Image (cartoon, rainbow, N blue to C red; front, side, top):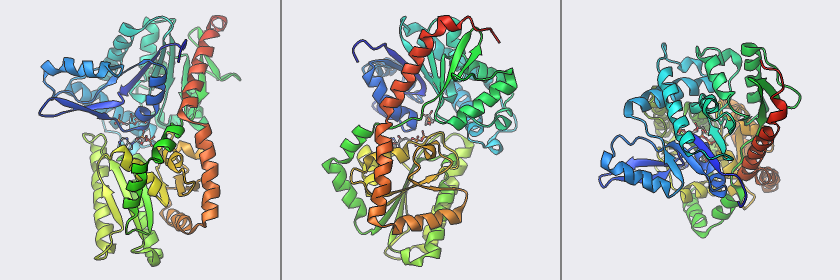
Amino acid sequence: MVGSPRLITVSNRLPVTVTSTREGFVLHQSAGGLATGMRGPHEQLEGIWIGWPGDVSRIEASRRGELTAALAQRSLVPVMMSRDEQQVFYEDISNAVLWPICHDRLDQLPLHVEGWDVYERINRRYADAVVERYRPGDLIWVHDYQLFRLPALLRERLPHARIGFFLHVPFPNPEIFFALPTRRWLVEGVMGADVVGFHTRRWRGHFTAVLRRLFRLEMDADSTVAWQGRRVALGIFPMGVDAAELSRRAGAQEVSAARLELHAGISKLLVGIDRLDYSKGIPRRLLSFERLLRLHPEWRERVTLIQVAVPSRGNVNAYRKARSEVDALVGRINGDLSTPTWSPIRYLYRSVPQTTLLALYRAADVMLVTPVRDGMNLVCKEFVASRVDEDGVLVLSEFAGAADELTDALLVNPYDVDEVADVVHQALTMAGAERRRHMRALRSQVITHDVHLWAERFIAALQDQHAAAPRREKVSEN
Ligand code: ADP
Ligand code: F6P
């Protein structure tokens, strides 16, 4: 984009992750909504992206320069962590404390939490990387809960910079957030930004409730809050997907061929695609499918569920437990209900190439997206964008941020195993005209509210907020 400001994207994970091999290393695409979603805006705005390339501890020190050069070719800047730092920053604090808090799982908290000093240290390392590359006029866009402290650390060192922060996960209810001894310090970190973005009105509502209770601050009618001589805008920006690109790729010949292969010998296909995370509701989804097969035996040997679970955060205990639970349920249900010629569940615990992902979206008679808590969920939007045939039914959890927008999906309470089974039956028996009516409405929403619009709206808000700053600096301090 000629004349556009340069964008510095900062997120914990880069859009590519490195794996060490005998020859050195390979780079592969990172899974996760943030990595997939920001790829387009990063390329369009010709910016740089600062983040962690994954565990480099097994890559020889002599090859690290090669890694940095390979990343630089894609305008990516690595922030390295030692194995010990990764354990405390990424596993213990980010994913064993902040992730469960943001997903309403107080029960997952360890009894004693240690490591906030390391969380701060790594956030400072990200700040160093940004400051080193910052040029006046750049826009800095910080992403997600791993970097809650970063906006304030940047504000100290770049007082006039344009800094945005976007939260990709839910912001929890204050009753849950207040369990964190560091609650004040984390919110102070976020408030270093000029614009703080959330996917939904509900997550922003939780955040304003926290501001009220911790600092006695109210959000004004223009959605800004006075903070240390500045105004901080709190915006709602529901993230989308690259719908045009997905539609184009999903229509490709190789995807159509892979779709036909998936359907061979199966009359009806249910599909689930998730990172293996306890927030995604996979065990209850499996139980709902079992319930369907028991209530409606006529579906046996006619319906198959393909569940892809992308390995995630395997060093965190709760994720190991989630994996064992899913393994055990798949084994039991298949053991109980399989026949010599059919198994109800095909379970893939691995990452799949994009052609397979798109073929699965295209092949699904019913897509099951049933998280028990999800900030947004992009898988459901990718499914809709891929359905160039305007067919297929989306069963979507009301606990996903996406449910606020995708009201033409069949919305379910993922905790209600019986209800989900009934709705899946309804989806499987829905008439073609009805399916297409729902899918057309879903597509119109997903196509008009894509990831580019999301990024443009956030960036425009950041530019506006900053342009208004001199006038607003007169507003009284808190
Ligand atoms: P989360 O960010 O919690 O993982 P989302 O549903 O928002 O959940 O995003 C998941 C993203 O991960 C989607 O963009 C999806 O395409 C991507 N993804 C899923 N499976 C794979 C895979 N095998 N390889 C790469 N990306 C994947
Ligand atoms: O979208 C939420 C998120 O936590 C992102 O921040 C992250 O990139 C993604 O899920 C995947 O998680 P991880 O980076 O821990 O593999």
